Length: 255
Image 1 (spheres, one colour):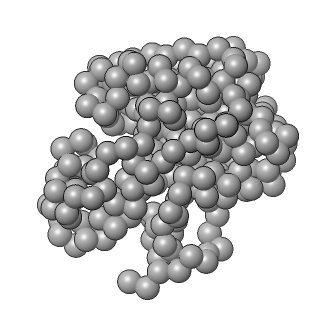
Image 2: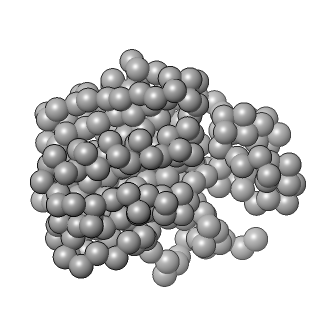
């Protein structure tokens, strides 16, 4: 397949159209994930909240594009599109890789004078505990097996060789940018509340690693856990979305 770094396709997709929204919830996918993961959330959000999700290059309808090689570049591109939208308060949510992209996007928005009101992070260690790991260096068979065992590949496609060959390059790229990520050593703290989520049977993160998010902001930090593995919150998101909605409405977003 011929790939290109140029595309007219947008990074930020609008999943619900809201006139004059009081807030925008922008969701960032995990490694290999797409914007469509968050479409089911739309029915549970307050009427005043517009739902958006990010589509990374190399994923879904951007399959022909080269994946981006750094989280910083992802954040810069997403923030540029958000800054072109009509101004309102932003809340960002990210799972795993997406949590780091959301954090870096919040930093870019803050530096451009448009700070986010909430940062929600799931299934990810805090930025100074993130990165590292050698999964991206595994051969194709072992990499596919590792992601499948984690629950990141639907069982009905895990044994499809053509789909595996199509998805492996972008999975490897996503995992590479995640495992090679390093936060800026002089990053100034955000000013918004941060809430962390994790599953108690997740082999990648635990309470201590999620608690590492407490240092990214001068505002309040809190966290909540549920049973399950790394992708449990995305597979069964009702309680997670309800918790996010409670935080948003407590912050003044109308229902």
